[in-house]
Length: 525
Image 1 (cartoon, one colour):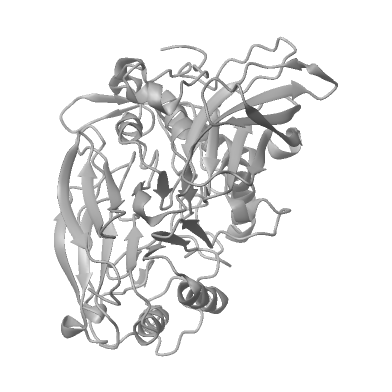
Image 2 (cartoon, rainbow, N blue to C red):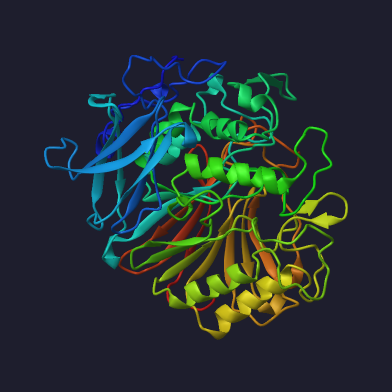
């Protein structure tokens, strides 16, 4: 264990040749806090780099400094940087917690891009810090190149943080070695409402030991506490190296703010001095904007949006939903009329329009909550779409029924739903023959996660849309640690020749638990 993380990452090809040993993957800082910055007068970027929302020609590069600095990005087709392009990024300072992003544009499609970020003293540009290196692939322009990505979510939840005794979040190292085009994080990037204790005793007597920080000692309420939650994950060297070599598409769910939150909620929770969830959500989304590279959130505070389409060449469009910001209150969810639902009326219309305009072979709908799995919120209310009534659509199901009907009648092909949230992995096939609501085309929903949180038993199914749980792996006990139930993540592989999509549900250790091949060009299957 070291006090300062290693920041000079080799290129992707070098890493894939095995030059970095898995045993050296952790690079964890001291147990009691953040990296120990050496304030030598030159800006330092010891939190690593990230890239988000990569398309065929654009990307967004992120960095964090230890002081005010000018962000400079160089891109090149080679690791040597002999022929490079310089991008002048923003002046970053305390207003963004010393984080900054630089948009790249005009990139070549389907190419490996090498980049390095240098931080310069704003008063003396000659005084620069040590460069931080990364690499990513742009989306292809040609169908034959195919596409492959991973997805999961739920990071550092239920008290299971960075455990140095097991190498930290080593699942990130396993995913990095699969060399995906990008990683889709389907929500719960942080657990702002989850305290990380120094140690937890497991049922068999073993001790789970956590890296701890001041920000993780209580629930997050202030802007600085939310920022500290995002910094916590970056203390793990596995995460930083993964970020430097695998671009991300991220969305949020509840734990970025607080468990099961919805707009307008007033808390009855003694842990919080700030009871207005809208105030907490505004602080969280600001920290989210500062710490994660999201192309639609780089606007002024209070502006921008989470929902967006990230286009990945001719084969794939990813429709990133926001099932938090516009939902109605959690309730028994049995109302016969519901225009707000879980998406809000405007987002539903946006999604319909974007699906209709998409010319991609596959349209992945990245949902932060499942459709047909019952997710309770207390004794009487419900958190997701379904409420356990297997009859005709009620409550939030009405909005989803409208969307599914639209997809069928507009003959929109290639829709696949991916999600996380429920802390187990499963595959559901929805068909009208089994459903109470029948005006839709068959589709698949795949669930993966948690990536670094507690595992929970399988959720109950709701029969309204006729789901058949073709596969599930889940514990019978609640909140099993990653030492007891290794993390889950999913893989999507689209063949450039046939257009077939293969979805694999994986568990850390390299095991493929379930695999399904889907055919292109179909409205439903």
